Image (cartoon, one colour):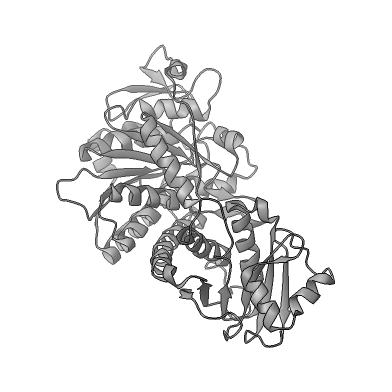
Length: 496
């Protein structure tokens, strides 16, 4: 897909489709007004017949408009003008992409940058347009013997600007958005692969290939090396799997040689049965998505390298399966973590924190400026925040504000959750330093509290993405979140 900036007259553009907005009540956007004028009120006549009311996300495809060079004109409803917001913009872009996929147009011109969104400039709208179109066009069909045959593929999008002075900045926004989109797509592809293909070994191979392509260092630690490090919590989870575990380390270094890196740890459970605390059969196939935290680390490293962000970034992925087996951990077992702390495992389905705690301890050798972990960790965060926002926990309120702002800028939003000392009393154990769950079950907060016991030396952020990493229903699949949030966080850090 190619994205370009366009500042020419809409009516004279020879393109497969021009997209323009219509507000509730039939009020035309500036570009729609221009098309209406040159066509002799053709659009007004259509609206007066009631073919489109301007409801948010409604669409109307027109052809052979008089005095308009485009083959088609797509009108998209914007809803009430005074209520138009970021969410409205995304709804309009999603509806637009859905129609463009079915028209057979090879190229299209979007005239949605002109809509006003409070607090958002043209660069933000351009970036979001690119990301929304790429998201709408994404399909994961590479495993089908004969991928569905569709119409001619949409290959080029022109983003129309009314102000020539913003063209250069818009071009930069397109380049940034395309790098982020490539990171998101990479994360989606990994997340959507079935667990018989996307094994820990496969992830290690993908890391090596990514390093070769983009020029950063990759180190893969095998099971023997993991044992030598004393990562017994990680290995306890891996005990029931026949797939060899891998600790994947990717080092992207584009900052000063002596600058402390930002370290991002991604949960890489390539399939999670729950172990002996086995999950119900319902929807268990979705447990292939339990490595979406790891997938997002891949996506962030890819986008960072493409954008040449001037920072040092280290990605760490503890990759394994959580399976029931004769060698699997049992409820009541005690393991000694890499940190030296001992954990009584009361629930083998609370395994993510066990692989992460050792990986977070390993991350300390990099003396991180910021330590971030990303994980599909708890169902509780889904119940709390749904699919809208990722949960953010941290030992630094200032760092939380930085992360939340990055999420807002990326429109990959996150919400600050508490990490108060009172929650730390949950994990009492009579035979170990603490347990991996509390006596009254578990929640997103207590899971974050567990991780905080392994991150006290550094500024640390935990992102629970169990609700945002995937979508269910007809659009079931990986979302690639929070790649955009983390890239914007790194961009902010690079700017100082």
